Length: 213
Image 1 (cartoon, rainbow, N blue to C red):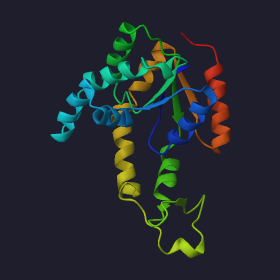
Image 2 (image 1 turned 180 degrees about the vertical axis):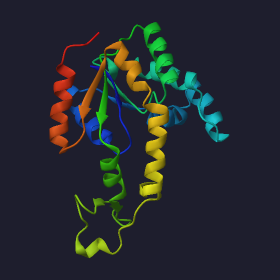
Image 3 (image 1 turned 60 degrees about the horizontal axis):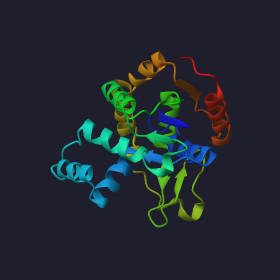
Image 4 (image 1 turned 30 degrees about the vertical axis):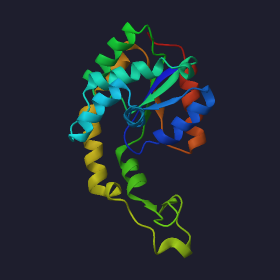
C-alpha cells in the first residue's frame, strides 16, 4: 500500500499514522523526520538541505522530493509506504506526482481525515502537558488527575489564536491538494470524528474501496 496521509492540524493524523503503519506493515515517512535524518547521515541531499536550514530558509521542493524518491527506494518500502507532511500545496503535489511517475511508482491512495474546525479548536485548545513527565492530557477528554492538575501547562501553539492561524494556513495552502487528488480518483475521505478505533475502521474500509479512477 503506497499512500499519502493528509488532514488539518488536530485531525488525529499522528494516532492514525501509527495505526496504519502497524496494519499495513509499511514505514511511516514523515517529511520532517526524513529531512533531519538525511542531514544527520550527511547524504548529498542532506548536505544541500542543511545549508538552507542553517540559513533559516525553507528547503526547496525539489530537494525534499529528491529525498522522498530516495527514501521510498529503500528495501523497507518494498511493501509500500505512508508519506506524511508532504505535499502541503497543490504545486508540490503536482511536482511529486511527476517525480513518482519518473521513478515508476504509483500511489494507491491519498487519505484525507476530515474533522470540523470547531471540533479541532476544542481538541487543541483543551490540551495540557505535564512539564515533569511529558504526559499529554485534555481538559475535557482526559483531565489531569488532581495531584498534577496544578502544574500542567498549555503549549504556545495550542492557544486559540495559534490554532486558528494554523487552520487558516491549512485551508489556504493545503486544502487545494484535495480536489487535485480527487480529480485523479485516488482520494479517500474519512470522517475523523469519534474514538481512534472507530476512525481506524473507517480508514481501512476506505482503503479497501475500489479506485474511482
